[in-house]
Image (cartoon, helix red, strand yellow):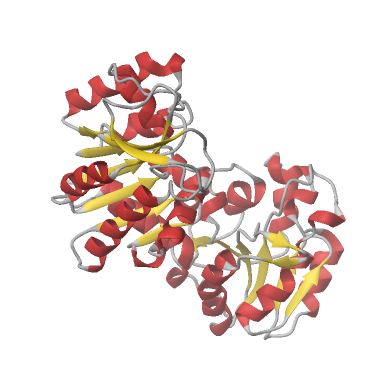
Length: 405
């Protein structure tokens, strides 16, 4: 399992702790519209404050292209952050220099200091040593609680971690632990569900999983490409015609490694991807030439349930149909409820992530019933691809955490 220092290894009393968070949250009409990332950050901040630390928050927000942009200021997040914490939040108009230092110096013991958007400076995305030095000058200890940003080698996720005693926050530690239990030290058999539109966007993911899991369930538009590669007539369904040989190679690799590949056996078809249109459920050897497969059917759900029945661990990335448009969410919802029921019964460790996956599980009303639901997006996907994330790797390197001297 990945080794790194945790908050329990730090003595933060009387220290200024720089906490790298991901508060790149959705905003609508000038207000935060989804506080999930804020809520998940609270345990780390509360732990540090209760132990006598002065907490300074660092985050990016949007894509301001390395210069100040009032439309992408983190100030809009302050009210939601203060409400979630139940304590004052002092906002600084810059993340380095006098504005940041003055805000930190003026903060009372019950206040959290929140610095302006890191990406207002080009040095953040460039992983610039001088910018990292300017950040490090503001604090004594460093905590990274932003797994969702750990796949970026930016100054606040890598270079800053090389300059201060450091540790993983509660959220970061929970995310790494969940993924490690799912893929590094899993209870077997292990299954993976991979959905989405295209094979081409998930080649590295599928290539890694066929070597590491016992059952691989494929759904969504990418399953159509595998079906077409196997000679199945799929009508007007989404298909990457230039990826047929790749699909065949993946199928051969699965057979060579003993990974059982599960593809749909029936589908819900329609003339257009729109709500309220005429649909039909057909076997996949009877897809009308003028129609599109837009969801898996009940026979496919039953096949997936049978394949998952002996499995003890599951990772899930991607929906099994065009879930954003009812009724083509039915297959994903049905499988999600099966997974949730087995998880609740203690029969399955289930870890899911990715934006569409989180949204699909929310549609099914089961997101909180899985063992772990990651909101990390790209970082979650790259971990499943077997990549070493720069922000995680930086927590394993010197100087060692501790901060007790």
